[in-house]
Image 1 (tube, chains in turn cyan, red, orange, yellow):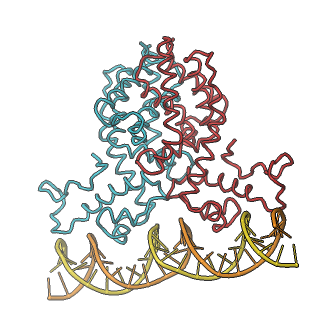
Image 2: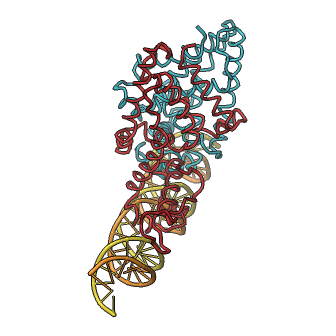
Length: 220
Length: 220
DNA sequence: CAACATACTTATCGTATGATCAGCAAGGAA
DNA sequence: TTCCTTGCTGATCATACGATAAGTATGTTG
């Protein structure tokens, strides 16, 4: 799982590692630290606001080494994005169990999505930061993630509506609403905390958010 | 109204202006241009990502003049925020008509909020950019806007629930959900357009968004 | 051992950033 | 007419930015 907060990461020099033992210098470790720092920085400050110098500093490395491993700021952004999306997918897609009715799979998707954003609030922040303007980076996200995800959930909504379980509203609009409600408490967590005196990441709040979305989406 | 796109602004050298006619040089005009450019830049790139040099350039002025009028980047941000919040309030608060039931006022609040975000998507982008971290700027927004707004709408929700018109869910959570659904289509408008091939700012989409939120909030 | 690739460092590039200061020009008030 | 405030410009500051080049260790492979 992507670690959103701490720079620590599992070493790849473990016994079961397939590659030959690489003595003391392990580039994968510093790369992982850089990717984690990059996630924090890009999601906090946006692409142009983030400084790869600062990212290198946070990862306890130097700027030239960062650029040696990742080439450029743009490339670092993409590698970071691939890293975090791969992590998302690894915990998501498995639920293709065709034996479940669509509405039930939608219910699971909602819960997974909320927990996903709770675990990795940076992800949705990244998409929010890019989502207002058509840039190369938005198109990149769209091709690598959004498009497939959208297709999948639209299917679920339509099938769930046929089952009579899902409220009859425009699927695209509903998907946006689900995403919005699932993400916003974590994206603006500080504001949430100021307003409600509650930690949106706590189990109670996460479950409450899921329950609210379910109330909206499914017909009673 | 705050103009989110064009740098043009109404001149204050009109005949009805109370201040003495000020010859050719009118600082208010260039100040207005700067504020509009600042809104665009800060909401696009975040506080640290935005460049006051570029803002000055967009406003057809120089950096020293910008700093002469606004002092510093931080101060410009605050003046810009005051400017946009004042504009929001001027089109909002009037609906304090006590003769209407709370649920009806909530219905109006929802429609106003959606249209507000459609008119000034930058505003919510600004709050999203600040909302994840407790900074001086977030606290500033909180004190100057969020707190009062929250108090007002929480009242409406609770009263609406007493009237039996509003779904019985936690008021704070409901407010966040309303805000999220009202804002997100405009905040990530480019993504919205890519996914749905529809313009979220069009009248049809705005009204559709309002209708969806109403379906969720009010009991049938 | 020699040859070579990989990981990394130091020094430096040109440019952009936020900010300051001295000076100037154009009113309005005395 | 003199003075003073206000609006504005040009030059310049130290610092930060993304990026590159040259060189140095530390392996692994032949």
